[in-house]
Structure formats: structure tokens, C-alpha cells
Length: 154
Image (cartoon, rainbow, N blue to C red):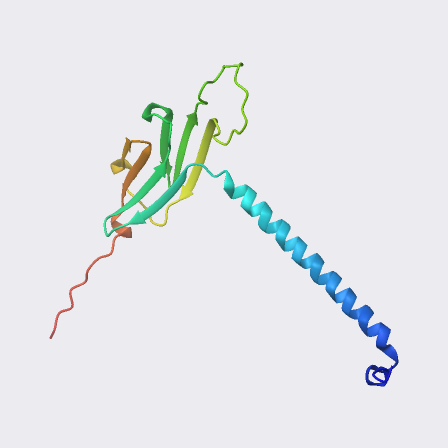
């Protein structure tokens, strides 16, 4: 007990404060972990998966839509928002004799809206659907394109 004078009379109180601090840190950690798990749950089911890229004149949206057909897709643009809608059918739908051990492929309708980074010419948008991959070409509006300015020497 020779070390007790070092801590003074609040030796047990110091440990109690450390325990309270640990308890608060556990609470904060658990709250953060719950928040991250909620975010992960919300984004796990995002469908379809998309990439948006650009060059000088166009934006390109590529979406993975396995198992769909072009006639089950709807693409619309309003302002700077592009919306993809469609419906996936379940393989063997209506077959009551099947017992699933695992069912990860979902069926049903979907809608996904994406804000485009620049204004586009909606009347010139083109879309191609091949082998389950949708590619949408979105020509940039004139005001969204970079303009080269010539500098004149005097």
C-alpha cells in the first residue's frame, strides 16, 4: 500500500471516474456502430448499381441490370435529375413446389433517382441496353461545357 499516497485519498474515486469514462466511450462507440450498420443496411439494397463518368462533351451513366429486358426499363430526366425505373421478375415465379435454401436475388419494381453533376440536353439523350448493361449517353448543355478562350497578344 506504499503507492496509495501517490494517488492521494481519491484512489478508489479515480478508478470510478475511469470506469465512468470507459462506459461513456462504450456508449459512443455502440451508437456510432449502430449508425454505420444502419447506413450499410440502407445502401446494401441499392439497385441498380451505377457509374457516372464524363468527357468534355458528355456524361455517361452505366448501370448493371441483369435479368431485365429493355421493354421493362423507363428512363426520364427532369431538370438535373435522372430517374431509372423498372421491374425484375423472379425466376420460377409462381412455382409453389420450390423450397429455397438461400434467396438473395430480389424481384419487384425499382426506382432510382440520381442528381447529375451538370445540366444536359435532355432531348439528345441516348440509351443502349446490351447483355444486362444499360449505357446512357447524356450530352452536356452548352453552358456546362468548357469553353476555350483565345488570348490575344497586343
